[in-house]
Image 1 (tube, rainbow, N blue to C red):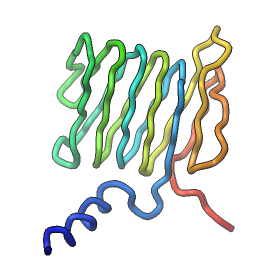
Image 2 (cartoon, one colour; image 1 turned 90 degrees about the horizontal axis):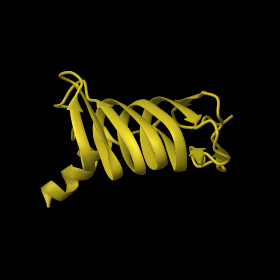
Image 3 (cartoon, rainbow, N blue to C red; image 1 turned 90 degrees about the vertical axis):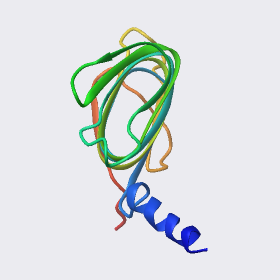
Length: 152
């Protein structure tokens, strides 16, 4: 019984802490870069995913499936490419850079992110920040803070 009581508190210390923001991206074509502390889960139809995990001891570390090629960029950064890939990193600080087509991802945490649609396509997908109504992804770089919405 003690273990069951301890797990929820430990899990909330890593992801879903007070002040965390949320990001949902659906069917994106272009580039998404998330620098945060929290968690990210995603998939893509075809993409290149680069994940920097500066401290492998503060979370799950990157988990990627479906990659056709993998390359270590340096000690803390790895790049995967392929089709129908799935990727996640939970807990701790990370930077995730996704470039491609048919990108879906969810993020919870604190940090920042940029979105840029793929010039030349009519529909580059949509995103929702902190549960707000979905907005289209523009062809120009858009910068946002990832944090809880403030009221007032």
